[in-house]
Length: 203
Image (cartoon, rainbow, N blue to C red; front, top):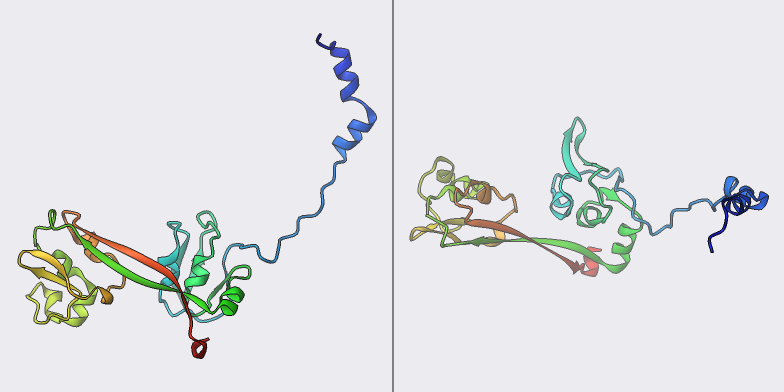
């Protein structure tokens, strides 16, 4: 049997209930020492290695910009998910968040980057746009900057027998220029990120 409306009103307007509701207090919030907040600058010099941007899984969360004093990473708090990968990836300790740097020091670990270039030969038409646009190729062979033929096999990639061939994947910097310039979408650059142990003499 449903209670009458007056019974509900008497329960709601009890002095004890009103006091608890109107003057409720909660314990002050304290941020734990292990909490990962938004990354902050440590004051160390940024060398524009861009490892922080490579490691970041959240698009638009971090950008390294040029300032009058040099390079400086900027965090977009609206995009940052506070994972701390940018802090771990930076080789110079430019960023800090929680106890990440402290933990890495005691664990003697760091993040290592490598890149893999996958070519779908069924889509590649051997146009050579990837090889000509690749900034690594241009540094190794100046002829590539002007669309000329390669004069060395020390290139990162080149067209061989009508298909793009990766010669030295270890030279890839992950810029994805080849991927962006391929008209058929035949190239994909994969980023490989792993934690490695630092030898004692390098700690």
